[in-house]
Structure formats: structure tokens, C-alpha cells
Length: 110
Length: 117
Image (cartoon, rainbow over the protein chains, first blue to last red):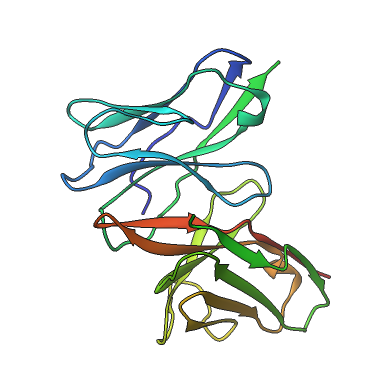
């Protein structure tokens, strides 16, 4: 069961920050927020995950609201290679497999 | 680390034949692997959970006799599509689970494009 809601599509100008929102209003206390992306005809690629604190790595930043009911993935300087479908997934730390929702199709425009 | 490979990357087969897809965890052992299917312009749909040394658990609506899953070792799971038909044409993706820091992380393979003619 996908427990997240994402906009179906977004555009972003090359070089600008891409902010991808995700609603997960029914998230449980021990569930993490994961972000993956899928470039056309490839397997999903891990981006970042977090529990309640904001997280940053070499690919992106993850901002989780204080009530944890929503989050935003930030690609600070989008490039054409960031064009992909981005999936926001919530799941407990152990056990359960990932259930994918419909994701957000991000198009980076030159 | 945590690389998952699939073989073949693309396969074309004739209707009625069977085709086997391999999923390997290259630098870690995975007691659990998952198989997904993705139709064009749709999201990934979980087909089954494969546990090493035991029978796979299939999602509702997935025919276990048609999609045979074998997980004979900690680094290899196979999906065999038996008596394939054109409607089985899809993108098949596996993933492998590993425990890191008390959490289960999941890594995905590059996918296998199956075309049944």
C-alpha cells in the first residue's frame, strides 16, 4: 500500500533548485521516509532517507516537517540528468518491502 | 557497495516459451530478495518476496505457477516466466535487502526488459 501522495509531474529549469513535495499524513512513529528515483528504463536509484531530522548527502537534501506529515526532496542544482520519476516511500526500519506509489515525473528544462 | 545485477538486461522470446531472469547481489548476502514488474508509464508493482531456502511469497493476483521464483543461495534469486504470452511483456526489476545499522536497506537491480512475441 502506497502511503504517500505526490504531484504527478513537475518542471524545473536547469541549474535551479528542484523541490519535490510528498505528503505522508498517516506516517507512523517508527517509519522512515525514503526517496528513490528512476531514470527511464533503469532500476530505482536510492537518493536519501530520514526519520525526523533533516538530512543531506551528496545528491540531495530531505526536509521533513516537524509533525512528519510531509517532506520535501531538494535537488540543489538540477541538471538534465536529474530528469526522472521520483518516488517517496514510507516504511518501518525493518521488515516490509517497498511499495511504490505513482511518483513525480520531474523534467529538467535547459 | 550494495550492487545488484540482473541478467539478461533484455530478452525477446516467443509466445509459449519460458524465460529465466537472474538477480544477483554482488558484494553482499541477501536473505531476502523482491521481484517487481513495471508496465509502460506505470509504477513498480511488487510481485513476490523471495527468501533464501524457502518458498516465495506472492502478492495477490500474481500466479505462482506462472512466475516461478527460486532463491537457492544468499546471492542469487531467479524468476522464470513460464509459458510466456505477449501480456507478460514488461520491465522486471529485482531488489535485495540487507541489514545495515539495525535497518533493512533495499537495493535495486537495473531491470530486465522482456518482450514476448
